[in-house]
Image 1 (cartoon, rainbow, N blue to C red):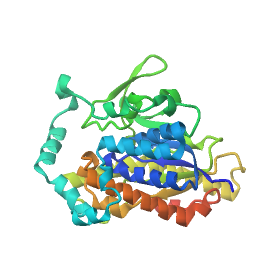
Image 2 (image 1 turned 30 degrees about the vertical axis):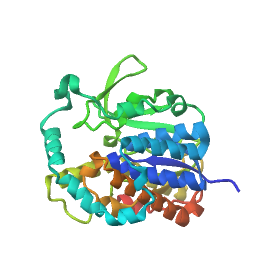
Image 3 (image 1 turned 90 degrees about the vertical axis):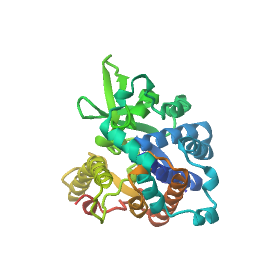
Length: 344
């Protein structure tokens, strides 16, 4: 039986991208589907690059190892994964998140990030992700073989999205995609026309962008791995909570706009207003765990605490398992999410 082919749309969200690590780990482990295309922003771009490099170097198991290497470098501790008795003795995830948020060290760092500019550090500035990304195998990341990979960043000057593909994807493109402007200096990249443009995090313009996955040679199914909650039941009160919710809303706005467009095209095709085959029939699916994400704080996005990363990975694996159990039969047939309900 032929495996369903899917595209992956991987959101950014800082250290919360460890949830996506778990999703990918489960998909690779089971082998129920084939990954044809990937569009990633910020942490989603890093996950996508590590995934593709691993697939081309040694298949699914090598991809799992490469993702574990990436998050090991970022801060995850493999020894905490798969040891339930240890996790049971440690504080709950919400407690850990609040403890980090209200710790003196985080409070000082958060204040400095708001009151100062990363440009004020002068020659002492360093992006901690650079040394990690320099060890990625970019000959495989940029290869024409394997899944199509698109990396999204935001042009600081124009505010428009910039999608890097194939040979354009390097250390700087990944750093640009994950460049939060309060923490990192804008990443300067030479464009093909010789100009130099500066880029910030892709989440401001596409988190992630779906349109790179509409190419005719790619399958209809787009599986969005969502790590920024679309809804929160409680009103934010603290400065950190308010800023976090503002960021979630702004980072989800471009995605919701694309989902509206997809729903419009689907309706036009169903009504016969657009001839069959004239436009891409995009089938949308989503893997998410809003309960886990709303339990976390803004601090856990920027502080990759090893235990929380391990728990996020486990939550991602569980969410992927639930999705495959419930919706694998819909792949290639129909969307598994109600788009109107999602963006309405």
